[in-house]
Length: 294
Image 1 (tube, rainbow, N blue to C red):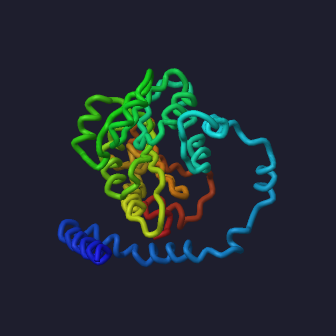
Image 2: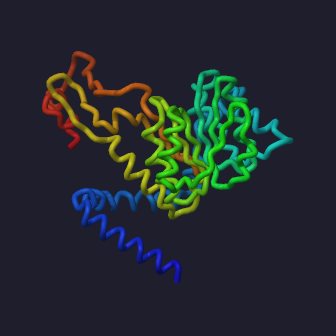
Image 3: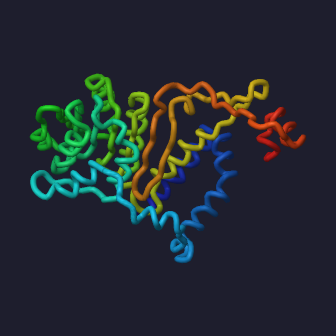
């Protein structure tokens, strides 16, 4: 019965979306065949596809791995407060968060559990790191200490985040390892991503199972990275407010990462380098039709 109720609610939400935003809904419907094709391609990915490798990449895998303080800390942490992470997250942390090591950095982690990861952030980022733990359980207050402040609240409660932002005006990194429900993840993203400092990083962990509605939200969110406002007179592409603020969106198994631009981006340059041009390419560039591709 709960399953049928969920389907009914989804249908009602879909109809409401068409009423509120009919043009945007039809745009999404036009992309539906490609979305379905991509979904089926991923579902039916063959062993042959997975086994292809490059000799160059194989040689790299045998080389000395780059230092990763997050992995080093996690692997050596055999006693004390518990940390529970999928191990491939540690490489993602290194890829997106290493730039903050040794800097003044303000880190929010939702979902404290046994408190071990709060210590990991402090240790890896260094003495200038300030950590803010968020959890719905009152007993997590015991993890407050020098450099760690604890907030008790529901991550799906927008009023909680409004109060939080008043008390914590600066946030560079947010790790959502909280309740893992779609509604919680979406509210947290909507309330806190705009609050992150320029250059900040938002991570949503444990985006598990297929289907999952949060990736659908992220797909709709990231579509507007591709807005195209070309100016032929000076070979530039004007950015939208969204493109000016959001630098990139990354999808990993069970993990979504959003990086904010370190500074506002007013335009993307599209220079034409070289001296030899086919007439068709030059005409396409002059008229802004993406070099004849549309």
